[in-house]
Length: 82
Image (cartoon, helix red, strand yellow):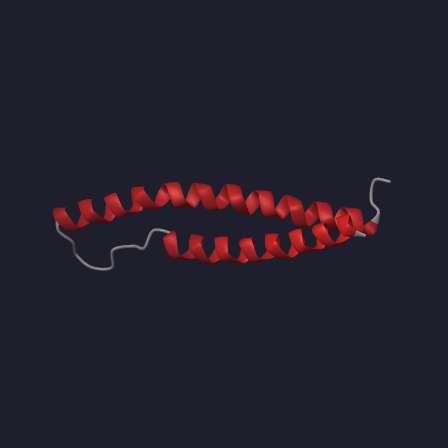
């Protein structure tokens, strides 16, 4: 009984992490410069985007892990592979 509850809460936590990661990835994606820009503005924009790359990679890794948890939970629930 305890094991089933643990997996159920793990699925809920994974789903919440997926939503949070998706929102963070949407926020961290590069925004285009919509006007004529100077070299300083372009350098600042490029620096900001390079700092966001690490967060995007970490988000993608976390997202992938959570998707595996959810898929594994669904597979175990449906009895696939038994």
